[in-house]
Length: 137
Image (tube, rainbow, N blue to C red; front, side):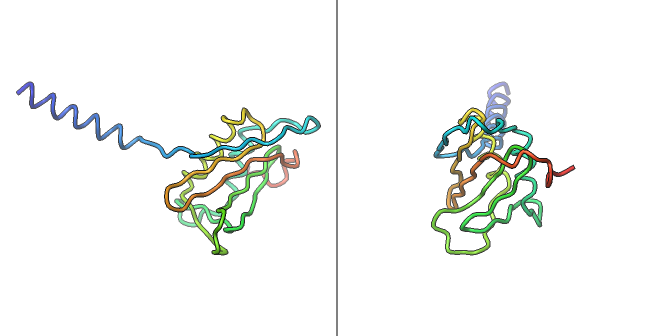
């Protein structure tokens, strides 16, 4: 009985750990810092990402050649190098992970992260216009 319970518990733990496994970026690139620009704010990068259309709640729509959204100190560009399609979607979770991992890896400075398995996307964070013009409420 104890062996049976231990086996079930181990299986449950394995299932839970696999369920929470997260796809992480495979490549990073950090850009030069512009000393005349204010530092990027994580909240502005998050809000910029939230400006991308997400029609069904799961996928971010972007142009294959890249398009951007900006809010405050941060501008987020999402693109797919080599994509011939004009309108592409990617899981919003991939884009969010790439944006936050680029922010962490580049220590809050401009940079990018590549993420994905089949349809890789690149999320680039850069200096915004420092205004709050198009930021979500």
